[in-house]
Image (tube, rainbow over all chains, first blue to last red; front, top):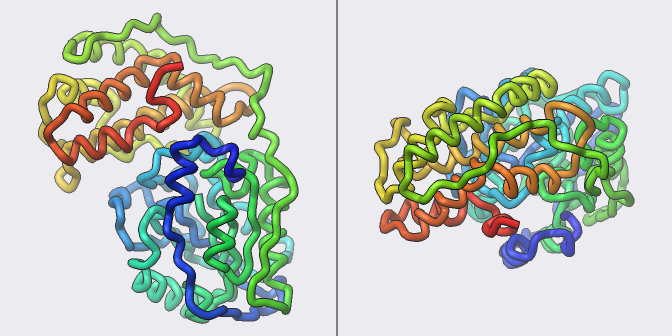
Length: 153
Length: 239
């Protein structure tokens, strides 16, 4: 999308009508140099282990994705039917670039890949997600993560 | 929300007005379709460029808002002119809404012809998203056909309502076909795969019929799930 003009009209109207939060203040945390950073991914694609139940509509929960979880063990249960899943069907990295991150760590481009990554349901109202943000941040700090890539779908 | 709690972040943004408004401390807007924040499937170098542009913002000392645009479209945003679907389907005959036997027989034949391609796709891509409903493929059509007769079946999954199971069967069907048709050959555009599914399969006709049944249903759960979360707006009418 994406370029707005490329989005089907019905979806575009919904997307643009979403009340996006204007977060208070202007937070800024300066991380270590990239080559020393431990990096995690937070995806809003509603990814989870295949053995787990789907994300419910409107849920404010988060799920943990171990870095070691194989693509064959991951399911996507986002409620929206108005985004492309064809690319993800070929390659999960187009939404959740865990393999690219591992390659970068192997080459020294980043310090390391976090052992755990995080997933939420992107269509949920962010105003309800403070508790999940607390929970995710606490885990990130506990694991010594220096920076997070926020990846929507 | 994460940065204000003390951990640095960089956001990929698919909808530019959103990333402008939320004022993420660091962001890269990308021109790709919704669902593809890293641009191009099966293209490590391309995905890496997106990832590196984002990660590089973490090294910049100035803030508090950095927003860059990724400069290039992804190759598969365009249709591939020489792409031909390799799945051969039985001739399309759409039953009337209440003719459950015809839906079940027709879907049985179609799923049988798609299944080997889906197996090949699962092997090729190393994963599948089929399975959300926890309902086996053979039970998809019989379960959905019940809704088409104006009845609400019992949910076969303890923690999911009947309507939610229908919705996840629809997700499973779409994944099954759209994975299968990519089992062989080079990469089509997302739209090519969607057009193949929505314009030529009995499964798509079944999902459209399910939507129609939902619109006429007095069951609120089914009305909502079936009318809004089965058929994407651009494909409600057959091309």
